[in-house]
Image (cartoon, rainbow, N blue to C red; front, side, top):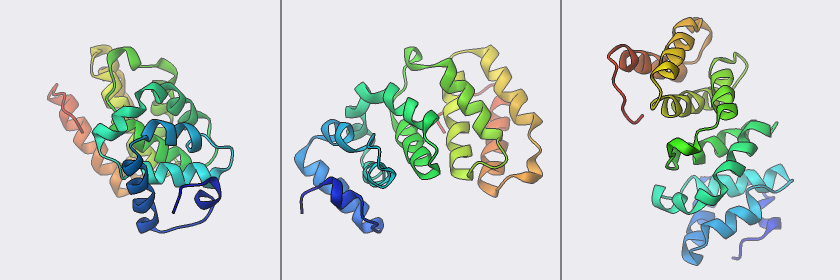
Length: 179
């Protein structure tokens, strides 16, 4: 079955997302697929396309590098929590060079990793992305540490608490690792 906008507007299961991925993989055009559907005005289409892309291997997602800034813009601007989480998930799996670091995106991640009414999936992705962006800069690592230490941890879900604890341990040991 061909991938169409109408097909992506439908609700589907995990298996449906896997099917979308396999069809894109077979065509070998992750970039073209993303350009056509990931930024669609219809939230259902964008969400479905992103869900399919989350099944891709990291080297396949590397093909989306020309869209890195557009993906960042979408993550920061969308009002839809599913589109935000899925977009951040794709970004988090992409290679990020020092020149890719954007202060507006880092500020966004700082804000959303502590935001009490944010979904825990978005919070943890923002925490991981902030950590990656701060790694080249000791002063930013210190700022991230202060932000994490200031979190009123009782208000967060277990996934956020666990990742925060892991990051604080790494920051206190001055270790930088891939999360």
